[in-house]
Length: 280
Image (cartoon, rainbow, N blue to C red; front, top):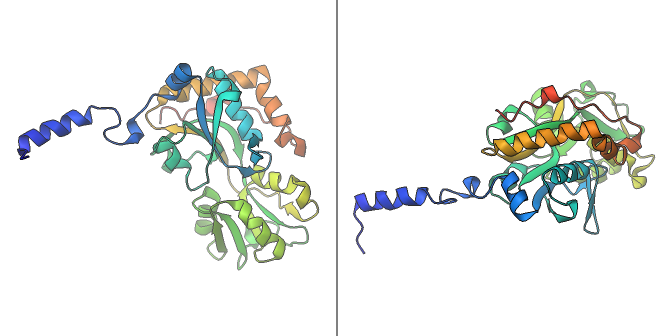
């Protein structure tokens, strides 16, 4: 069948008005709407970060998991109805944009480059980049990394910082920094770098007792946000309200104490004035 150019333009214009016709990034309900209509929510987490988000026999535990439960409850979703989805550092943006998940709660640093593609609620925690080394290592900070092999997650903020600020370091990258640990234990690499709370989780694992230590000299600020689709400002603002309420009623502190707080670090104080990214 022959279609004139004018007719084709009309057809294209009509299709552009159909939800999802221009790609899944702009389709589907907002997070608030989905939660209200279906009483479910899908949250992306990294499944192998001890005390943050660790998957064992199909069950997820950790601080990021608890934050996800707090948000879900605030949206009217029973935590039992959360659908957890495994993701990786390089895939966090993709699973938000293609609709695989509604939210990502996965040690997700808020930065200007990411804010161009997605929207962030929070931050719900501010971490700092650190180094995990063997207990007998002489590395005391990033200034000692010249010529050393350092491992991190591909595409992560810590990996990019090592490459740009410490160019004499040899950078090894995996899709998940947990894959760096066997190399650290064997001596194939000299250090693992990512956020201090992530490294703390690895060091706290019983199987790693006496093997590794945190250098304890952070060299960045990593504000953790909850990622969602760029267009969903209303849900972003609602989640900020939920986080602020959790700080007031003690549920945020309880989430911390049950997970990362077991390492002896006191629960941080949420600063509502820093939750200003929804308008970006």
